[in-house]
Length: 224
Image 1 (cartoon, rainbow, N blue to C red):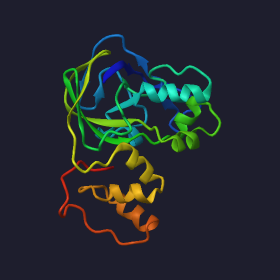
Image 2: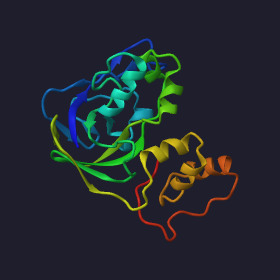
Image 3: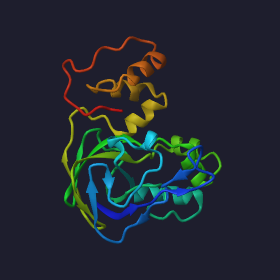
């Protein structure tokens, strides 16, 4: 399991980028080791701090294997960084990562927090028909991470999974639950400290009261 590309980008003005009018989705391989700061990679910008400015979204990882899957279906080459990820991985099941698991990469320690949810900027950037729906249905969202320990990362660094919560709720579970999968939602509801929006979603989707988290359950990071 390793990093094959570390990608950064600057915010630029773009008419297609929605009401904000700026985006930093175009990430390019850095070609050198990059310091990881508490808010993300040095030299990397985020234009939309309202939706992408959380510390839980400091770093975004996407698997090269998922890019290859998309290449076959889209019929075009997809370079590392095209989806806006900071870390392009190889040999790592990013979508199967457990919420709260920790990765040691180079000198940095990162914690898996949540999946990427496709937005209008991503849709316009890709310029593919029905892109948001297709990306959602594919269930290959990649993972956001928070920074636990700063350090530097570079292409070729190994990814060591140094901690994994026992609850077993994965990035894929989170993504499926958000889009109405009842079984996945029940798994997410086992997470103590989860955001209250999960209980609201459960009430609408499952039509049943939700018991409070944190009773007779393993500790875990918040789900979203």
